[in-house]
Length: 218
Ligand SMILES: CC(C)(COP(=O)(O)OP(=O)(O)OC[C@H]1O[C@@H](n2cnc3c(N)ncnc32)[C@H](O)[C@@H]1OP(=O)(O)O)[C@@H](O)C(=O)NCCC(=O)NCCS
Image (cartoon, rainbow, N blue to C red):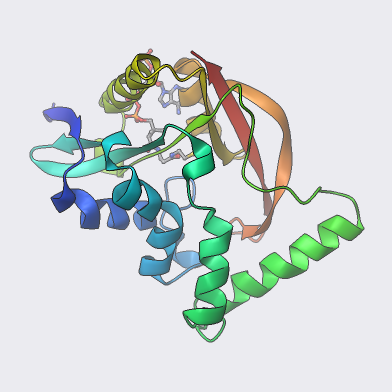
């Protein structure tokens, strides 16, 4: 069995984390079927953690290669809003001119307006509840999964949160990501609230997907 370990983030891991973020960006599969620009994708989903709260980032290594990460945040009020980063990329970074990102950006606007009109979804920002102020993202390349490293990295993160006095942690996943939800339940998280339509995002077969919040009190 390959030998893996969990360790704190170092600056040299930044590029590997951005790559893994993109390669696992849709329920553990590559995000490039709907978003081809790796840099803006990583800016949305990993830059806050690596660049502003690196002490809350953990990496998993197998045979000295980074194969996964946990991107944590102690106080979610401080984290960037990925929607704002996406909007900046759309209007100032050329996203609306890029054929690899324009369709999903336009669809996000269409979905948001249509869901509001049909009352299928209230317009809400990132999850914000003082009972679970911390949050995390976790992703492993396929070669790093099923080795026990997910449990180890999550346990390390939850211990850090307890030592820092955080009352609770939340995460947002897709309701359709049954295997991640099973993992999070194993690690002590519970479903919180109903799944909400995720604007703009479709499965590779073109089906709409839903965001699902999970929480754990510490
Ligand atoms: C979800 C993920 C982080 C789990 O990490 P992992 O290293 O594969 O998990 P582990 O091998 O440490 O397993 C930990 C526990 O979770 C359980 N588990 C993991 N995946 C499971 C699944 N699909 N169904 C049921 N249980 C599962 C394991 O049985 C294990 O339980 P045990 O320790 O009591 O035996 C990893 O598989 C992954 O990155 N998946 C793709 C990306 C993704 O979906 N990320 C979440 C996005 S929100």
